[in-house]
Amino acid sequence: MITNDILADSQKYIMNTYGRQPLVLVKGRGTRVFDSDGREYIDFVSGVAVNNLGHCHPRVVVALQKQAQRLMHVSNHYHNEPQINLAKALVTHSFADKAFFCNSGTEAIEAAIKLARRYGREVLKEDRYEIITMRGSFHGRTLGALTATAQERFHKGFEPIVPGFRYVPFNDIKAVEAAVNEHTCAVLVEPIQGEGGVNVPSAGYLTKLREICDRNKLLLMLDEIQTGMGRTGKLYAYEHEGVLPDVAALAKGLGAGMPIGALLATDKAAQALTPGSHGSTFGGNPLACAAALASFETLIEDDIIVPAVELLGQHFLQGLDSLKKKYPFVKDVRGKGLLIGMELDFPGKDIVTSCLKEGLLINCTMDTVLRFMPPLIIAEEEIDKLLGTLDGIFAKK
Ligand SMILES: Cc1ncc(COP(=O)(O)O)c(C=O)c1O
Image (tube, rainbow, N blue to C red):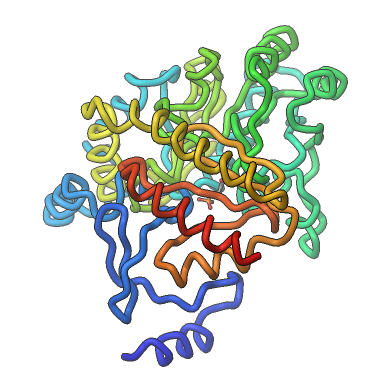
């Protein structure tokens, strides 16, 4: 099928929920993807922070092949080894004591919301159900996660949204303190806001949130869906401040391309969910867990990938900073590791299209923030290629 026919079928048969590029991707290897016309692109999107090990990492592919021949799915009425092994690995390398598995980021957030409410009601045995979330956040598209997302533009037309959430400005500790009341059970926050424009809070923000939570018997729940799995130069972004949460939501990079989400929790928090209180048919599916385990073990065992992220990120930020000095329409450059944003004083859509024409996939969020989330295995030369291309595009502006 030639590309135009594929695009026509896409328009005809798929619901119109995404603003898509006219590009059909058919193959991926490492940091590169290939379209239906055989063109090659360097991928600075990574399926939105998913392909942290690059596309089709051999260890993940082999794990999937082996597992697919053995057992693809069983009900959670039974145990399965890949799920147990993945839970053990995640717990061993985090703050957590227990894991719950689901299929996406938004489901991990739903699990966090349900856990927090049950914690308030069943563990603390108080009338606590309210969750504090941050302006500019993004937590997902199902109704609970959508309501946790403190951006009204995502709620429009879907009202009534779910009660029991209180929004405060991001990076504002006093606002969190003022929002706590006798009904509050948890604070939910991204260590760095991704979709909201790559917003990095001041140093000490998570530490102070931890203190507020401890003082008020609240759960500190981190949305590490975008920042986790090495993206910011540590396995989890909370490690930068050495702050331990009670709960963390994972997805995206966890499955190396297979759909999987997880909620990690301490025993204290996890006791809130009891048999029958939550579940998922596909959650912890052996196939997804085998892929996630292969990917996670690679991240843990390889002593180069995650440590290199910090250095690659610094190189990237320095290059973008030089462009900021050169072009006054670049308002800001920010980020950590390989989660990086460049804010322009005009919409970034055309820049994304120009990069595409030059064989580079980049993303734009909040209309004006170019966002870069390449695979963690990106080479410095590939970053330089992007920097040079942006320079050329900006020079014509
Ligand atoms: C921080 C954060 N939380 C939650 C989600 C929702 O994840 P999913 O699209 O897998 O439901 C996203 C997706 O972009 C995200 O970036």
